[in-house]
Image 1 (cartoon, one colour):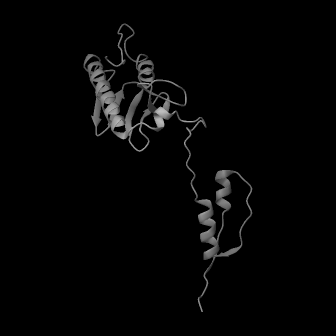
Image 2: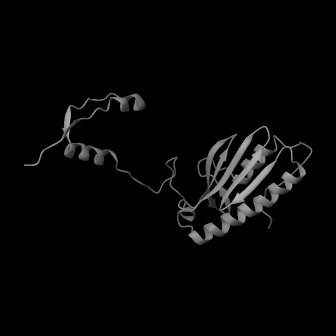
Image 3: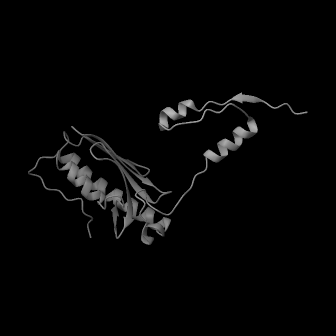
Length: 176
């Protein structure tokens, strides 16, 4: 005869995080606990953005090879422009680095930006000390956030122009 193991399963701490009422469970068997864990751990994926809007077909059907070509081209072009700024304004932009699809940009008085490729999602992610995190998809020939329709180049331009001397004009637009 198999001996069943009984354990006290308390989910009271979970209610502190979710702030929802809970029903305390008494003793449940391991089989019942496994069923409960399976029921809770289901994940559902959809073809919609985090705002609930449908992802455009151009973004959803972007070939991986095209993603890599466009993202590498974008990051290389951005690196060239940021290195120019770093050489011209070493106190304001002391460090810029690109390794394996991850760019770090140190900006005085603001903090560190991280711009990196996300191949599974076919996106470029931005972690900005000013505006926070955002994701950009290759849409209509540019890297655009589907959440707020801002271009990655425009976000960087707007945030960096606050730090650099106002007499200097610079352009992050792609060269044709």
